[in-house]
Length: 304
Ligand code: HSE
Image 1 (cartoon, rainbow, N blue to C red):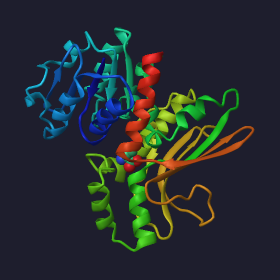
Image 2: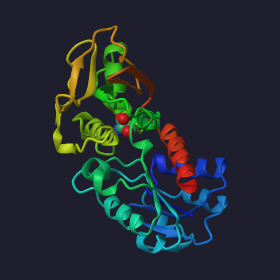
Image 3: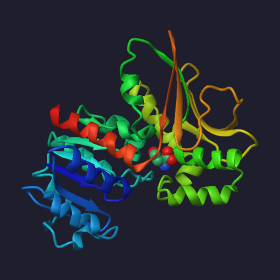
Image 4: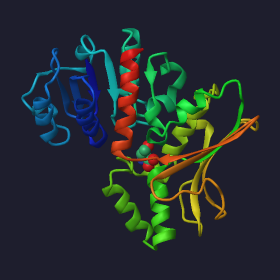
C-alpha cells in the first residue's frame, strides 16, 4: 500500500521501522536507479533483501517487478517521499505529487524542495510534511494549533548539520573542515552540502513554516548569507518577521544566554505571537528521528 520514493539513509530506516512498528507494508520502492513493485506488498523477508542492495540498485534486486512510478500509482495508496531535494525544479517529486493528488492519494514527505518552490501548488489536504522541518520535532503541528493567535515573528536554528559544525568549532575546538567532514559521515548534511552551508536548507524550512501560517513566501523571497564562523558563539539563524515582511538566513553571534542557543544537532525555534512567546527545542537532523515522524504522518495519512 505504500510507495517509498527514495531508498537512502532515511528511506531504509523508515522501511525497517514500518515493518517493526506497524502492519502497513511497502508495495513499491524506488531509488535513483529505478524501482520495483509488488501489488500484494513486499514481505519483511523481501524488504530485508532490499536493504542489502547497494545504493541506487533496488531495480537489480530480482524482487517484485521493475516498474515506473506512474505504474505503481495504480495500486499504492500512500507515497512516502524521501528522495534528495532538487531546488532547481522540485522534480521528479513535484510531478509525482500532482499525479498523486489527481488520483486522491496521500503524500507523506521529508523532501523540502517541492514545498519550498511551489507550496500552494502541492499542499492539498492529503499532503503530510511534518518531517520537512526540524526533522519532525513537531513544530508544524504546534503552528497549526495556534489559530487565532497571530505569529508575528519566528527566529530559529533550523539546520542540524551546520549547528553541529559550529558546536564542534566553538565548543570542542575542532577545525571547520574537520567538523564538516564529520557531519558528512554522520549523514546529516544534504547530499549536496552547499545546501546546508549556503543556507538553502534552512531557507526552505522557513518557507514551509511561513506557508503553514498562510504567508505565500517562496524560496527566492528569503535573503541568504552563507555560513561563516564569526567568532564565539556563531549560530546560523533563520528569521521571518511577518510584520516587516522579511525573511533571512544568516550567521549571527548569539549572546550566551539567548534562549534559542542549542548545541550539536539540536534545533530551536522561538515563536512570537501577538499573545505569547513559545520556545521549542528538539533534534533537528537524524535518520531515526526523521523516519519516526514520517511514520507518524503515514499512520495519519492512512487514517485520513
Ligand atoms: N541537512 C539537514 C539539516 C537535514 O542539517 O538540518 C535535516 O533537514
